[in-house]
Image (cartoon, rainbow, N blue to C red; front, side, top):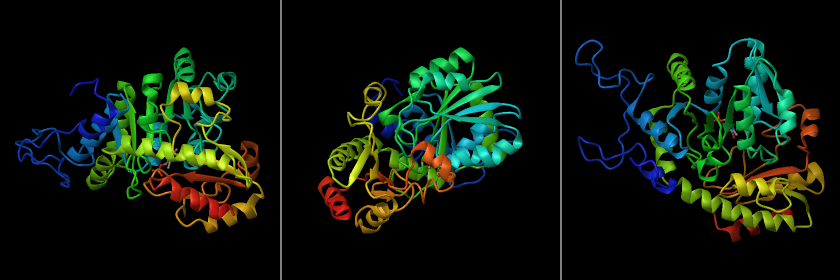
Length: 382
Ligand SMILES: *Cc1c(COP(=O)(O)O)cnc(C)c1O
Protein backbone atom coordinates (compact mmCIF):
# COMPACT_ATOMS: atom_id res chain seq x y z
CA UNK A 1 0.00 0.00 0.00
CA UNK A 2 1.22 3.53 -0.79
CA UNK A 3 2.90 5.24 2.17
CA UNK A 4 1.62 8.74 1.43
CA UNK A 5 -2.06 7.98 2.04
CA UNK A 6 -4.01 10.26 4.36
CA UNK A 7 -4.91 9.07 7.87
CA UNK A 8 -8.61 8.81 7.00
CA UNK A 9 -7.70 6.31 4.27
CA UNK A 10 -5.12 4.40 6.32
CA UNK A 11 -7.61 4.00 9.19
CA UNK A 12 -9.86 2.00 6.85
CA UNK A 13 -7.36 0.19 4.64
CA UNK A 14 -3.94 -0.19 6.28
CA UNK A 15 -3.05 -3.85 6.75
CA UNK A 16 -6.39 -4.91 5.26
CA UNK A 17 -7.39 -6.12 1.82
CA UNK A 18 -10.25 -8.40 0.75
CA UNK A 19 -9.67 -12.00 1.87
CA UNK A 20 -8.01 -13.83 -1.08
CA UNK A 21 -9.96 -17.06 -0.42
CA UNK A 22 -13.51 -15.73 0.03
CA UNK A 23 -13.42 -12.10 -1.07
CA UNK A 24 -14.66 -11.04 2.38
CA UNK A 25 -14.20 -7.26 2.47
CA UNK A 26 -13.79 -7.13 6.25
CA UNK A 27 -10.90 -9.12 7.73
CA UNK A 28 -12.17 -12.32 9.38
CA UNK A 29 -11.69 -12.94 13.11
CA UNK A 30 -9.17 -15.79 13.37
CA UNK A 31 -10.06 -17.45 16.66
CA UNK A 32 -7.91 -20.52 16.04
CA UNK A 33 -5.27 -21.04 18.72
CA UNK A 34 -3.10 -23.20 16.46
CA UNK A 35 -2.27 -23.44 12.74
CA UNK A 36 -1.70 -26.53 10.57
CA UNK A 37 1.86 -27.16 9.41
CA UNK A 38 2.63 -29.00 6.13
CA UNK A 39 5.49 -30.73 7.91
CA UNK A 40 7.30 -30.13 11.20
CA UNK A 41 8.37 -26.47 11.25
CA UNK A 42 6.81 -25.77 7.80
CA UNK A 43 4.07 -23.24 8.41
CA UNK A 44 2.56 -20.25 6.57
CA UNK A 45 3.71 -17.62 9.03
CA UNK A 46 1.46 -18.63 11.92
CA UNK A 47 2.03 -21.45 14.41
CA UNK A 48 0.31 -20.61 17.67
CA UNK A 49 -1.85 -17.57 18.50
CA UNK A 50 0.15 -16.35 21.50
CA UNK A 51 3.15 -16.01 19.18
CA UNK A 52 1.27 -14.47 16.26
CA UNK A 53 -2.32 -14.36 15.06
CA UNK A 54 -3.67 -13.04 11.73
CA UNK A 55 -6.30 -10.71 13.26
CA UNK A 56 -3.74 -9.35 15.74
CA UNK A 57 -1.21 -8.84 12.96
CA UNK A 58 -3.76 -6.85 10.95
CA UNK A 59 -4.38 -4.59 13.95
CA UNK A 60 -0.64 -4.16 14.52
CA UNK A 61 -0.11 -3.17 10.89
CA UNK A 62 -3.01 -0.75 10.90
CA UNK A 63 -1.97 1.15 14.05
CA UNK A 64 1.69 1.15 12.93
CA UNK A 65 0.63 2.78 9.64
CA UNK A 66 -1.46 5.39 11.48
CA UNK A 67 1.51 6.31 13.67
CA UNK A 68 3.80 6.44 10.63
CA UNK A 69 5.86 3.54 12.06
CA UNK A 70 7.07 0.14 10.89
CA UNK A 71 6.27 -2.24 13.74
CA UNK A 72 3.23 -2.61 15.97
CA UNK A 73 3.25 -4.99 18.94
CA UNK A 74 -0.19 -5.43 20.54
CA UNK A 75 -0.88 -6.30 24.18
CA UNK A 76 -3.83 -7.19 26.40
CA UNK A 77 -3.95 -3.68 27.92
CA UNK A 78 -2.15 -0.36 27.85
CA UNK A 79 -0.58 -1.35 31.15
CA UNK A 80 0.75 -4.61 29.66
CA UNK A 81 2.22 -2.59 26.76
CA UNK A 82 3.91 -0.19 29.21
CA UNK A 83 5.16 -3.13 31.30
CA UNK A 84 6.70 -4.72 28.18
CA UNK A 85 8.57 -1.48 27.43
CA UNK A 86 9.84 -1.32 31.01
CA UNK A 87 10.63 -5.04 30.82
CA UNK A 88 13.31 -4.28 28.22
CA UNK A 89 15.34 -2.59 31.00
CA UNK A 90 17.87 -4.21 33.35
CA UNK A 91 18.40 -3.67 37.10
CA UNK A 92 20.36 -0.43 37.62
CA UNK A 93 18.78 1.31 34.60
CA UNK A 94 17.04 4.64 35.17
CA UNK A 95 13.91 6.18 33.64
CA UNK A 96 12.84 9.84 33.67
CA UNK A 97 9.04 10.12 33.80
CA UNK A 98 6.80 13.18 33.45
CA UNK A 99 5.39 14.29 36.81
CA UNK A 100 1.66 13.76 36.23
CA UNK A 101 2.08 10.42 34.44
CA UNK A 102 -0.95 8.09 34.25
CA UNK A 103 -1.61 6.61 37.72
CA UNK A 104 -1.23 3.01 36.53
CA UNK A 105 2.16 3.79 34.97
CA UNK A 106 3.22 5.44 38.25
CA UNK A 107 2.14 2.27 40.08
CA UNK A 108 4.05 0.04 37.62
CA UNK A 109 7.25 2.03 38.18
CA UNK A 110 6.78 2.39 41.92
CA UNK A 111 5.44 -1.03 42.94
CA UNK A 112 6.61 -3.43 40.20
CA UNK A 113 9.81 -2.20 38.52
CA UNK A 114 11.45 -0.17 41.33
CA UNK A 115 11.58 -3.28 43.58
CA UNK A 116 13.29 -5.10 40.67
CA UNK A 117 16.04 -2.47 40.62
CA UNK A 118 14.79 -0.03 37.96
CA UNK A 119 15.40 3.53 39.18
CA UNK A 120 13.13 6.39 38.21
CA UNK A 121 12.69 10.13 38.64
CA UNK A 122 9.56 12.19 38.12
CA UNK A 123 10.01 15.68 36.73
CA UNK A 124 8.02 18.48 35.16
CA UNK A 125 8.79 17.91 31.48
CA UNK A 126 7.47 21.24 30.25
CA UNK A 127 10.98 22.67 30.85
CA UNK A 128 13.87 21.26 28.82
CA UNK A 129 16.41 22.20 31.52
CA UNK A 130 14.57 20.19 34.19
CA UNK A 131 14.55 17.08 32.00
CA UNK A 132 18.21 17.51 31.07
CA UNK A 133 19.17 17.87 34.75
CA UNK A 134 17.36 14.61 35.58
CA UNK A 135 19.31 12.54 33.02
CA UNK A 136 21.96 10.37 34.69
CA UNK A 137 24.70 8.12 33.24
CA UNK A 138 22.38 5.10 33.71
CA UNK A 139 19.27 6.76 32.19
CA UNK A 140 17.83 4.64 29.38
CA UNK A 141 14.37 6.10 28.75
CA UNK A 142 12.49 9.40 28.81
CA UNK A 143 8.79 8.60 29.37
CA UNK A 144 6.38 11.29 28.23
CA UNK A 145 2.65 11.78 28.17
CA UNK A 146 1.31 14.76 26.25
CA UNK A 147 -1.26 16.14 26.90
CA UNK A 148 -0.70 15.02 30.51
CA UNK A 149 -3.37 13.64 32.77
CA UNK A 150 -5.29 15.30 34.34
CA UNK A 151 -3.79 18.80 33.90
CA UNK A 152 -3.44 18.60 30.10
CA UNK A 153 0.05 20.13 30.12
CA UNK A 154 1.92 19.72 26.85
CA UNK A 155 5.43 18.36 26.50
CA UNK A 156 7.50 19.32 23.46
CA UNK A 157 8.14 15.99 21.73
CA UNK A 158 10.53 17.34 19.10
CA UNK A 159 12.79 18.99 21.69
CA UNK A 160 12.84 15.91 23.92
CA UNK A 161 13.47 13.67 20.89
CA UNK A 162 16.51 15.81 20.16
CA UNK A 163 17.60 15.64 23.83
CA UNK A 164 17.22 11.83 23.92
CA UNK A 165 19.24 11.62 20.70
CA UNK A 166 22.14 13.64 22.12
CA UNK A 167 22.26 11.29 25.15
CA UNK A 168 21.85 8.08 23.15
CA UNK A 169 18.68 7.16 25.04
CA UNK A 170 15.10 6.45 23.93
CA UNK A 171 12.08 8.74 24.06
CA UNK A 172 8.81 6.91 24.71
CA UNK A 173 5.55 8.82 24.18
CA UNK A 174 2.25 7.61 25.59
CA UNK A 175 -0.03 8.88 22.81
CA UNK A 176 -3.30 7.67 24.35
CA UNK A 177 -4.80 11.15 24.88
CA UNK A 178 -3.88 12.58 21.48
CA UNK A 179 -4.03 9.57 19.11
CA UNK A 180 -2.16 9.67 15.76
CA UNK A 181 -4.95 11.87 14.39
CA UNK A 182 -3.79 14.77 16.58
CA UNK A 183 -0.05 14.05 16.83
CA UNK A 184 2.42 11.51 15.45
CA UNK A 185 5.34 11.34 17.91
CA UNK A 186 7.52 9.01 15.78
CA UNK A 187 7.60 11.68 13.07
CA UNK A 188 8.70 14.22 15.72
CA UNK A 189 11.64 12.12 16.94
CA UNK A 190 10.17 9.70 19.50
CA UNK A 191 11.62 6.16 19.46
CA UNK A 192 8.40 4.40 20.46
CA UNK A 193 4.74 5.23 20.99
CA UNK A 194 2.58 3.40 23.50
CA UNK A 195 -1.24 3.41 23.58
CA UNK A 196 -4.01 2.25 25.77
CA UNK A 197 -6.26 1.22 22.86
CA UNK A 198 -8.99 0.94 25.51
CA UNK A 199 -9.50 4.68 25.00
CA UNK A 200 -9.81 6.57 21.69
CA UNK A 201 -8.35 3.91 19.35
CA UNK A 202 -11.19 1.51 20.07
CA UNK A 203 -13.45 4.39 21.06
CA UNK A 204 -16.53 2.44 22.15
CA UNK A 205 -15.64 1.55 25.77
CA UNK A 206 -15.94 -2.18 25.15
CA UNK A 207 -12.32 -3.37 24.90
CA UNK A 208 -9.25 -3.23 27.14
CA UNK A 209 -6.10 -3.27 25.00
CA UNK A 210 -2.69 -1.75 24.37
CA UNK A 211 -0.06 -1.43 21.66
CA UNK A 212 3.50 -0.21 21.11
CA UNK A 213 4.68 1.21 17.77
CA UNK A 214 8.36 1.62 16.91
CA UNK A 215 10.81 1.84 14.02
CA UNK A 216 13.63 0.68 16.28
CA UNK A 217 14.39 -2.89 15.13
CA UNK A 218 16.24 -3.85 18.30
CA UNK A 219 13.44 -2.59 20.55
CA UNK A 220 10.77 -4.26 18.38
CA UNK A 221 12.63 -7.59 18.55
CA UNK A 222 12.72 -7.46 22.37
CA UNK A 223 9.08 -6.43 22.61
CA UNK A 224 8.01 -9.29 20.32
CA UNK A 225 10.02 -11.65 22.48
CA UNK A 226 8.22 -10.37 25.62
CA UNK A 227 4.82 -10.43 23.86
CA UNK A 228 5.29 -14.15 23.21
CA UNK A 229 7.25 -15.08 26.35
CA UNK A 230 5.05 -13.26 28.90
CA UNK A 231 1.89 -13.82 26.86
CA UNK A 232 -0.12 -10.69 27.78
CA UNK A 233 -1.72 -10.75 24.33
CA UNK A 234 -5.11 -9.40 23.20
CA UNK A 235 -7.77 -11.86 22.03
CA UNK A 236 -8.52 -12.00 18.28
CA UNK A 237 -12.05 -10.77 19.00
CA UNK A 238 -10.73 -7.70 20.84
CA UNK A 239 -8.29 -7.03 17.98
CA UNK A 240 -11.22 -7.12 15.57
CA UNK A 241 -13.21 -4.67 17.72
CA UNK A 242 -10.29 -2.22 17.84
CA UNK A 243 -9.83 -2.54 14.05
CA UNK A 244 -13.51 -1.76 13.64
CA UNK A 245 -13.23 1.25 15.96
CA UNK A 246 -10.15 2.54 14.12
CA UNK A 247 -12.09 2.97 10.88
CA UNK A 248 -13.91 5.96 12.36
CA UNK A 249 -11.03 7.28 14.49
CA UNK A 250 -10.25 10.34 12.34
CA UNK A 251 -13.95 11.28 12.06
CA UNK A 252 -14.51 10.74 15.78
CA UNK A 253 -11.44 12.73 16.82
CA UNK A 254 -12.47 15.76 14.78
CA UNK A 255 -15.90 15.76 16.39
CA UNK A 256 -14.54 15.13 19.93
CA UNK A 257 -12.25 18.14 19.48
CA UNK A 258 -14.86 20.43 17.97
CA UNK A 259 -17.34 19.82 20.81
CA UNK A 260 -14.65 19.92 23.53
CA UNK A 261 -13.37 23.26 22.22
CA UNK A 262 -16.89 24.75 22.35
CA UNK A 263 -17.50 23.39 25.87
CA UNK A 264 -14.10 24.64 27.07
CA UNK A 265 -15.06 28.17 25.97
CA UNK A 266 -18.44 27.82 27.70
CA UNK A 267 -16.84 26.59 30.96
CA UNK A 268 -14.17 29.30 30.82
CA UNK A 269 -16.85 31.98 31.04
CA UNK A 270 -18.93 30.25 33.74
CA UNK A 271 -18.93 31.99 37.15
CA UNK A 272 -18.70 28.67 39.08
CA UNK A 273 -15.52 27.68 37.22
CA UNK A 274 -12.23 29.09 38.49
CA UNK A 275 -9.96 27.77 35.72
CA UNK A 276 -10.17 25.67 32.57
CA UNK A 277 -7.24 23.54 31.40
CA UNK A 278 -7.66 22.99 27.66
CA UNK A 279 -4.80 23.15 25.13
CA UNK A 280 -7.02 24.97 22.62
CA UNK A 281 -7.67 28.01 24.84
CA UNK A 282 -5.35 31.02 24.40
CA UNK A 283 -4.98 31.05 28.23
CA UNK A 284 -3.32 27.58 28.17
CA UNK A 285 0.35 28.10 29.14
CA UNK A 286 1.53 26.16 26.08
CA UNK A 287 -1.06 27.31 23.59
CA UNK A 288 1.64 28.03 20.99
CA UNK A 289 2.99 24.48 21.29
CA UNK A 290 -0.54 23.12 20.70
CA UNK A 291 -0.45 24.73 17.26
CA UNK A 292 3.02 23.39 16.46
CA UNK A 293 2.61 19.86 17.76
CA UNK A 294 -1.08 18.96 17.47
CA UNK A 295 -3.53 19.23 14.58
CA UNK A 296 -6.41 19.80 17.06
CA UNK A 297 -6.41 20.36 20.85
CA UNK A 298 -8.10 17.12 21.95
CA UNK A 299 -11.35 15.88 23.44
CA UNK A 300 -10.43 16.16 27.14
CA UNK A 301 -11.14 19.16 29.38
CA UNK A 302 -10.06 19.60 32.99
CA UNK A 303 -11.46 22.38 35.13
CA UNK A 304 -11.14 23.75 38.60
CA UNK A 305 -14.47 24.49 40.29
CA UNK A 306 -14.98 27.24 42.83
CA UNK A 307 -16.02 25.58 46.08
CA UNK A 308 -13.59 22.63 46.19
CA UNK A 309 -14.70 19.11 47.04
CA UNK A 310 -18.39 19.88 47.83
CA UNK A 311 -18.77 21.66 44.48
CA UNK A 312 -17.08 18.78 42.62
CA UNK A 313 -19.30 16.22 44.40
CA UNK A 314 -22.42 18.22 43.58
CA UNK A 315 -21.59 18.53 39.87
CA UNK A 316 -20.58 14.88 39.49
CA UNK A 317 -23.81 13.69 41.05
CA UNK A 318 -26.04 16.01 39.01
CA UNK A 319 -24.97 15.50 35.40
CA UNK A 320 -27.38 13.37 33.39
CA UNK A 321 -25.57 12.85 30.08
CA UNK A 322 -22.01 12.98 31.42
CA UNK A 323 -21.65 9.63 33.17
CA UNK A 324 -19.56 9.64 36.35
CA UNK A 325 -16.89 7.04 35.53
CA UNK A 326 -13.15 6.56 35.05
CA UNK A 327 -11.62 6.09 31.58
CA UNK A 328 -12.01 8.27 28.50
CA UNK A 329 -12.13 8.35 24.73
CA UNK A 330 -15.47 6.63 24.15
CA UNK A 331 -18.45 7.83 22.10
CA UNK A 332 -20.23 8.66 25.38
CA UNK A 333 -19.27 11.61 27.57
CA UNK A 334 -17.72 10.86 30.95
CA UNK A 335 -16.96 13.01 33.97
CA UNK A 336 -14.65 12.16 36.85
CA UNK A 337 -12.96 13.55 39.96
CA UNK A 338 -9.19 12.90 39.81
CA UNK A 339 -8.55 13.40 43.55
CA UNK A 340 -10.92 10.60 44.61
CA UNK A 341 -11.03 8.48 41.42
CA UNK A 342 -8.22 8.17 38.81
CA UNK A 343 -5.52 9.80 40.96
CA UNK A 344 -6.60 8.57 44.41
CA UNK A 345 -3.52 6.29 44.50
CA UNK A 346 -1.23 9.34 44.18
CA UNK A 347 -0.41 10.47 47.78
CA UNK A 348 -2.24 13.67 48.86
CA UNK A 349 0.95 15.77 49.15
CA UNK A 350 2.11 14.65 45.68
CA UNK A 351 -1.34 15.52 44.32
CA UNK A 352 -1.17 18.97 45.87
CA UNK A 353 2.34 19.55 44.48
CA UNK A 354 1.05 18.65 41.00
CA UNK A 355 -1.95 20.96 41.24
CA UNK A 356 -4.56 18.19 41.45
CA UNK A 357 -6.85 19.97 43.89
CA UNK A 358 -10.12 18.69 45.35
CA UNK A 359 -12.13 21.02 43.11
CA UNK A 360 -10.64 19.62 39.91
CA UNK A 361 -12.93 17.68 37.54
CA UNK A 362 -12.04 16.01 34.23
CA UNK A 363 -14.37 15.62 31.26
CA UNK A 364 -14.06 13.18 28.37
CA UNK A 365 -16.24 14.83 25.75
CA UNK A 366 -18.15 12.28 23.69
CA UNK A 367 -19.99 12.47 20.39
CA UNK A 368 -23.38 13.63 21.65
CA UNK A 369 -24.79 16.95 20.39
CA UNK A 370 -22.83 19.89 21.78
CA UNK A 371 -25.99 21.75 22.79
CA UNK A 372 -27.21 18.82 24.91
CA UNK A 373 -23.84 18.45 26.63
CA UNK A 374 -23.72 22.20 27.32
CA UNK A 375 -27.21 22.16 28.84
CA UNK A 376 -26.21 19.18 30.98
CA UNK A 377 -23.16 21.04 32.37
CA UNK A 378 -25.22 24.21 32.79
CA UNK A 379 -27.86 22.49 34.92
CA UNK A 380 -25.25 20.54 36.93
CA UNK A 381 -23.21 23.69 37.66
CA UNK A 382 -26.40 25.52 38.63
C1 LIG B 1 -5.72 4.09 30.46
C2 LIG B 1 -4.33 4.56 30.25
C3 LIG B 1 -3.25 3.67 30.35
C4 LIG B 1 -3.40 2.23 30.77
O1 LIG B 1 -4.13 1.51 29.87
P1 LIG B 1 -5.06 0.23 30.24
O2 LIG B 1 -5.56 -0.19 28.91
O3 LIG B 1 -6.12 0.74 31.17
O4 LIG B 1 -4.18 -0.75 30.91
C5 LIG B 1 -1.98 4.17 30.08
N1 LIG B 1 -1.79 5.46 29.74
C6 LIG B 1 -2.82 6.34 29.66
C7 LIG B 1 -2.53 7.75 29.29
C8 LIG B 1 -4.11 5.92 29.91
O5 LIG B 1 -5.12 6.80 29.84
